[in-house]
Image (cartoon, rainbow over all chains, first blue to last red; front, side):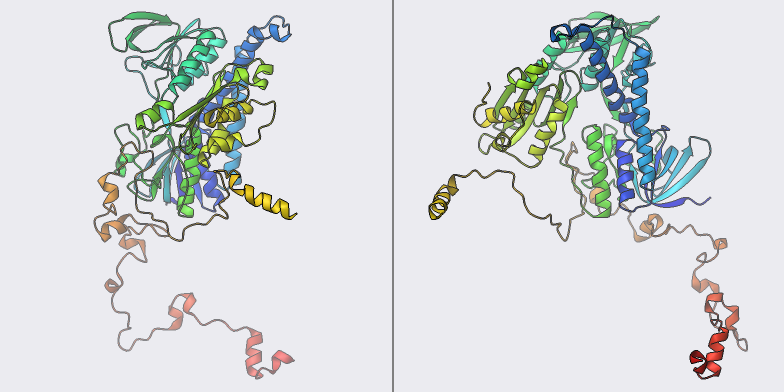
Length: 470
Length: 133
């Protein structure tokens, strides 16, 4: 059978792929989207951001009902955890959203092929259909959006029972007594929070001296570590995992300090490997088209997302930039605009990052260590939530807003927040940075009272002048 | 009124000018440079030679092997696949042999005469009068 000819073939139905498919459909292109998982939404919707947010939200409620009601004037009786139901609620959120995406594809006239796509040549993609059989499609433009996968830990085989990845961490059948998380980045800390709240004794082992992963401001990282420690999570920073022995239902990890000379061991019922993710191009047939990857396995692209074969473009986790769903989404819209209109826009200097612990941590722009490294002068302004009226009434006063600005022009350079709803609040900082606002612009913008957002305004005031309430 | 105006003018220099200003209706440049540039998030801030050498195809023929326009332009059409399988010059002379004439009806139907309707025949025979009868 002759391959179907399409204007656009998208390999991958994750956030990058499905958003590009919808946008291309809206622009009147004939689009085929190939996804092998069987459901759309990729890692984010199926085993990443979405299910973890369900567990984070509900485990926080459980933890709050257990430990944070009496002084609020609420007496609760016998509180029990129903892990099965907790997981069911998570699955309902996931299935509702993935089906919603499938509907959006249909609505925008996108053909959705459930199968594994691989390049046969520069224009033809062979699809091994999930239901059996094979087909192929040709595309005037082809988009690689195959995402990323968990980076394995050398010497510790992931079985998703005792040694788990983030995928296993959102589907444990019982609360482990002792859990060790290898990697103190965002994924590791979110999952550490979930299982610690549900009753596990959690230890986070991080190779670097600070938690939070790349990009988190050092002062903020220190603060959140203190807050999480107060919540019961143990930390071993500057520590490396040398080896691990899996025995009957438990794991013994041999640790050492990052510089060496402080060997120790730790036992766990479950070990979560959360040392990062790597680009996923397995089975894509890139060798058939001579596609180049860089030393980290990322597809090399230019500023318009073109690979060295110009009609094959690439976006999302599988190429340059931070592995974030919202970055992939921005790229998906931009790449379609480049094809259709000849111009697109993604500002890689203004991509927010959020860690959904409690309190949340969010940041956008440059951190203090970034600015120091680049030799850029800056002014700092902070405002603690303990001085914010709404945070005080909510009895959630942990955290602060920190702003960094140019001392000459007052232009905002970075925003770093620890606090309740920091993930929502960072949108204001992102908008201000995108528009090139000064701290005075933010401070002179009226913020409703009493809101947490007032802390944002007051931090801006503190940066160029003085905060009122602190 | 006049006093107010003067006061306002005098105070104009002291008014704050926000950094965020409305720039007016969005305009798109007439020409955009599409030559390959390094991706802003690329760690090396450079492109491999395969990008900067222009086309990834060394010859025009190699380009045609891969190019597409309403279907592949590749030289993979076999002789037994019909039209386009052989070059026109290989199909022999276009003129008929001596003493042989091509009939219009031997050609594909799109070259045939258009059939006349009864009304058209009637109109011709009556010198157009049938159109007004």
